[in-house]
Length: 178
Image (cartoon, rainbow, N blue to C red):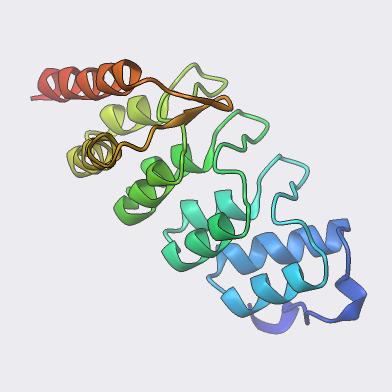
């Protein structure tokens, strides 16, 4: 982070605007040590900045799977939305981070979440023609179906029929792009 690097110490204990900014920067730049340090000082991993972004948004947007996994293991909300209602899955899809997309879906991220532009993460990938991300979404949804795990949507378990419907929607959009 260079000359402006924030040293994680007792001055950042608790959740303050400075500690939130430090957490988001650490997640953005793949600094797991700082993320863990800030968490140990009491900074909530679900803290949001003024734009509603969380550490999970930043790590997902930048493809930092190790940080994403740590945040999820430690209770980060996989369906947190920012001021534009984008979730970490929206950002991972937009930036083509396949392993992060799979990790988020397997952890319960909602593939049908609508942002303020009324677009789902799937819509974002289809618009950009990122077929490899669509394949990753299909793979993760199929893995959930095979293991008997259900997707979490709005705090409720999604039925198998809904998961299959999402999978069918993805396949249809994929065919339309060809």
